[in-house]
Structure formats: C-alpha cells, structure tokens
Length: 67
Image (cartoon, rainbow, N blue to C red; front, side, top):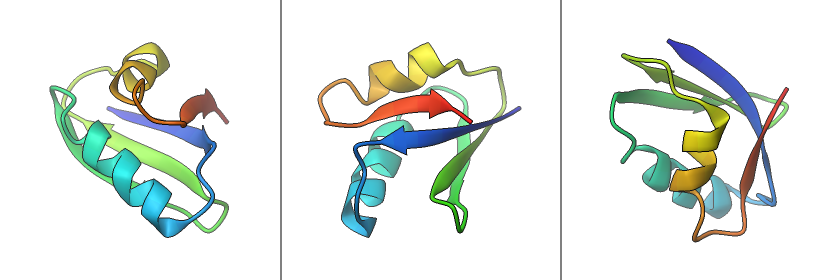
C-alpha cells in the first residue's frame, strides 16, 4: 500500500530525516521517499492511515496532511 502526504512543520532535510526515523517504526513500514515538492510517499505492506502517521509523529513538531 502507498500513502502520499505533506509533512507540515518540516523545513529542512534534518526534519525529514527525523520524521523518517519515527515513521520507520510503524508496523508494516517498507520505504519512504521525498519528492521535489517535499511530499512524502510511504510504502507499506498494509493500509496505514494519516491518523497512524500522526501518532508516530506526536512527539515532534510535524503533522501529516493529505495532498
């Protein structure tokens, strides 16, 4: 499964790196990629919701939003 989203609050590569580390802990996570528009695409072996993504990011200043 694939979910594409915008990461509000992320302003630099270090922000995306931290978010990626948090998201990699989600059960079923496979890969994450950032495109030229700074949108993220998360691949997994099961459906993952934005709610679950935001739960993984809850101790950061970032929030996932659908694009």
